Image (cartoon, rainbow, N blue to C red; front, side):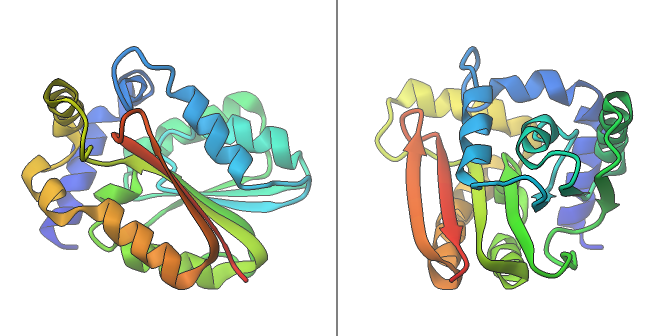
Length: 219
């Protein structure tokens, strides 16, 4: 395991216990980010019985929204690199009595998705993965025809006021090497990979360009 992945694990182990609280800072403190999660899950176009991969699922904050859409006949595979985050997700699954959720500790770039999954979702996580383009391509190959890949994540704003840019950097700093993140511009890699691997790709910038919602389908 390289140093980047080790750093991510170390960071999220420290943040896991309080992640459900600190994640409310995305994309800006005080903003009701749950609205964006709801929007992202709706963009998956889920139906009862569908199989969904929640990539870099963290503590499982998306699970209740997905469960509402797929019902007990559906399946969720929650994948995360960090054991502490998955432990929190496991407690969420247990407390809700969900028997259709599988949790997998592993690297998003090398995770072998179940064949022909109906949808893949990643929220506020994929931009931290150095191989984010590979994750998009790998996931696209596992989608059933018409299946959707949805990414909700953060980005550096292009034209936002300086105060908003500084605020966004302050929020993200505990979770990433900001200079490298801005230089790497992972949101551009994600967009390019989705446009190459998927069809009907849409890109929507949110909250003055500090976040984005990307949606694509397998043809």
